[in-house]
Image 1: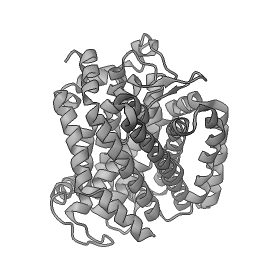
Image 2: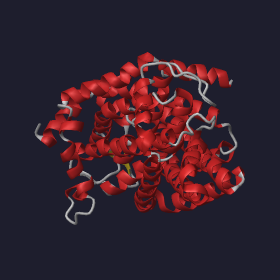
Image 3: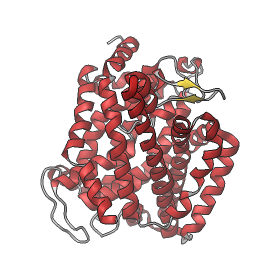
Length: 449
């Protein structure tokens, strides 16, 4: 069964899907004058530059979460196992060259994600309970219209449901539990039970607003702690950093031979693992984060769309790169470990036991906030598939899989995740391409470009 999963995953992440991902991202970039590069100053001003302003124009619009809370909630979902365990797994399987393809996907993915967020806000709806629902299934159904819109909107909603369960309930919780066991010796099942108990308290009693408030308080300081920790590892090994960059660029276009505990990889494997982990980490192309942004208070869809660009930049260009350089420069990348354990090994070479404790706590908080953040996407798919009245009942299913997931093999976990991402990307990217005219109109309406 595991071999079958691997074969399906390798097929999904072959050349056709790479062409679709990069092609759509490049097309959107060209239509907007490569705004993710030429307009990056504006993006910073309209996102991070507004966080601490008292008179924030965005917050005067309709929505549930403040833009900053939406950003934090999405970063809670993206900055987690993808950055810490996903990057390590990509290097362990695809070699150093996988990092290059993460960067490529991130660069074009910035505009893809802006399009997703913009369209999600434009086509969102307000439920009878006062909550906002939006995302690819809504802009696919309403934007494309007719039978095709209903079919592909439903297909996406089913794929989103599967992906959220796979990502939140399997990947995030497994990473949390294995990290806690490796560092503190906490049994896997105990971690799963504690995670579920805390989540029931926050989600059932507080809802979307409570999740946004929790992530807004936890994510920023954890990002800072992790960035400092990784930077110290890189600085201590600064003499090996040029070699690390050399391996990244060289083996992005050449097979990587076996070395130590590393079995070797092909160009296709490096490309596939780098792309899948990159998308898994920053979610550009999946459309999942857009379901959270659809709940945000904003004065214009394209304004909120800029937060999509900032998310990909923070997630992949900054944090994934720091993780990769820490692993490569410390020399542990080919020791045979994978996932979060490999990243922990890199930190342990410099920080020792106490530094490892701090990193593990950061991993636990990252992955736990990711699990919480994904609930917004989960309830959006449930609302679309089963109706708003069934959201309260079916929210309880969200708490069952983690107990099983904490004991599953990490290779099977990541194969399931890669496969789920592949299925969800295809209908979303096709829809974005078909709705690109609407996105460009909204983009020019707001930016004047």
